[in-house]
Amino acid sequence: MANQAMNNATCNDFNPSKGNANAADILPVDPFSSLYVHFGMLLGVEDFRTLNAYHRGKTWFHNSWLHGAGVIWGLKVSLSTENNEILVAPGMALDGMGRELYLARAACLDLNAWYEKYKDEQALKDAVTVDEESGAISLDAHVVIRSKACLDRQVPALNEPCDSSQVATAYSRTRETVELLLLPGKSDAWRDQPGDLPFHLVRLLFGLEQAKTDEEGVTLDNDQAVLNARNAVLALPADQQPAAYLKWLRHFAPIDEMAMAPPDLPDSDSRSLFADIEPAQVLLADVLELTLNTTENGWRASSGAIDNGVRPVHIPTSTIQELMCGPRLASADSGSGTGSVIPDADGPRVDPESVVSDNEFIHFNITNGPLMRASVEARGISVTAFDSRDGWITNEIKKVSYDKDNEQVTVELRDAPGATLLRLIVRGTGPFPILGRNRVPLAGSSTQAQRAGGASEGIDFVTMFRIRS
Image 1 (cartoon, rainbow, N blue to C red):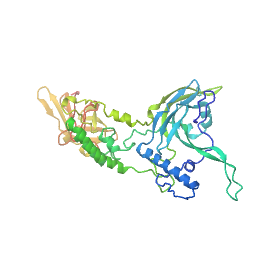
Image 2 (cartoon, rainbow, N blue to C red):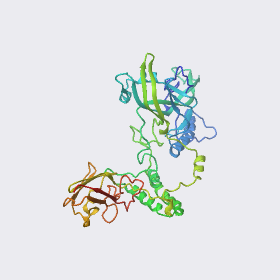
Image 3 (tube, rainbow, N blue to C red):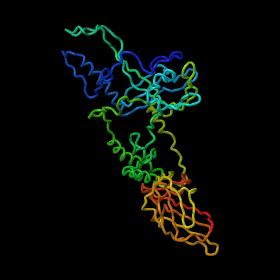
Image 4 (tube, rainbow, N blue to C red):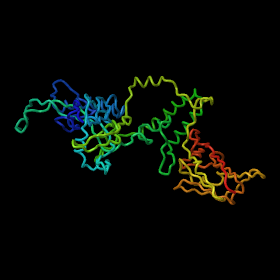
């Protein structure tokens, strides 16, 4: 897509303008070296480059680290099957290098021309599914915007002394424009996993992300410290929670900040000056299930869906400060007197639909596992049977085993139950609860997700069922 006026009859290609050059050469940045002038100083080309590089670098450095990549306004992506085009509306964004990406006029992409141009590239081949009967193709794709620097406005130029090879004209302007690309495949999920976004511990403190675990499923030390702090805050009366949150924000924010660092430059021993590296493109939208049919006039789009919600967005500070004045969200447990809800500590749960009895064996499956194997023992499980004559009878447990691959627990009784009504209790409370690999006790039933299991005191799973005697 080019930064040119949209034309429904003849769409612009995805590559902008004239005088293309290396962006680092024509747009140098150096936020920590400025021009020091004095009377009588002879100014040359490098002096003016230093002058521009300092101010440009200061702005980009600030934008990169304190704002980051995101769309500021506009840049809506849409699909026109009538005109066989992907359209991008005017707008502005910031990339991860701090550069302003400004699209002054709407841009479009002819889908037939795009597919014909790139259909032999492996990335596009891998994304395409072909209908054997109709010959139609379908694929997912995504639209990104990124910075492009161009040279413009040629003017007469003096030749270097003793060098007749120099041209008589040279470019006199640099133009910061953009290029938009339609790339095969869905966009990478940039906000789905804990730690994808900066300040993970602060986000975890306010319940915006899940805790991170190691390869064995154990919660990382810093994350567990945040969970403990959050549980302590939520246990306080509502009027004491804001000050407690502020205390822990000040504690965990420096840990997040110290973990941040510029990315390494490829094929180099140095780091980037900014929070990102080239090409520092900004995601605008996913194009889902785009279907192109072959016709006598080429490939025509018949259907597809645009998801603009995948893009990162910047909200103005004036809007943010007003949002902070909004009403505090009501608690689902407001009748408790504390005005807060203890968050779920991500403990394992029992699937009640999986509980089955086979003579002296009882089987059930675990969700949100795996379990800490050493905690899966008889002291954490109770099996009793009700007899109409003798009442409740305790069934002695011979052995408890755990199949990690199938997430299944098997309870072997010493004898088959002599009654038809069994009561099974799997402990998340008491001195011997079943634990997850994250050391969090059992949180009860998987169908009771609205009940939050704590990090120290979980919830018992209890069920009663009939069997054949």
